[in-house]
Image (cartoon, rainbow, N blue to C red; front, side, top):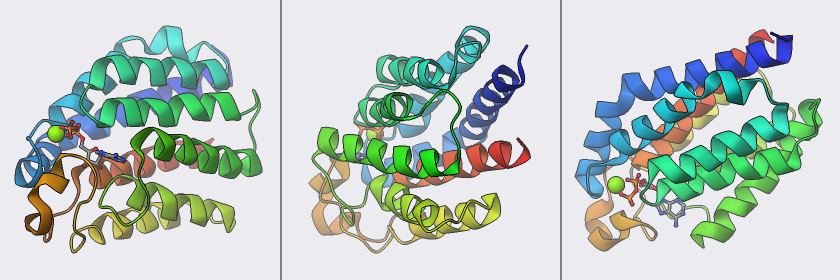
Length: 202
Ligand code: ADP
Ligand code: MG
């Protein structure tokens, strides 16, 4: 197996493991302000990517990411499936075969724009974007140290607690969505931390 393929396989194992470990927590966050399926949705999707890891990770970065994104769209379901699927598919479209840090920062920003177009959503609406956008800003500012990026992501997820949801199911609750962390913000922070800790060793 090439070094790239081994790294991609390790990434798949890391994201599937973190979602598995936190599936119940994501579900209970979604029980508070949604329909309680976010943990299960994410676990179904990332388990499917894990089951196809050998095939996916043999592909170069763009095809690997597009393949994983397509799988997430098919398997996660809910609102988050198409949105996470779009994020990974767009990363695959934007990244060159041998990506460097500058490519990553630029592609991540472009992938977020694709998620925003798909979700018709912006920052501060209490969604995954409230984590993804601050992480994009950190990367654009040249912060690539995994621990620092993870801190940014987790602080951003915490900062969704006082927000009122204006997108997704949680928006049906209006003011009652205030006081709970957004489940998609939490899953984004967990994914960012897991991905960062694998990439840092590469
Ligand atoms: P569903 O809401 O269909 O049950 P999930 O529970 O899997 O789907 O995912 C909910 C998460 O999806 C929310 O916590 C939020 O972060 C994210 N989300 C929902 N709608 C949007 C949107 N329009 N833009 C960005 N993120 C969204
Ligand atoms: Mg839900």
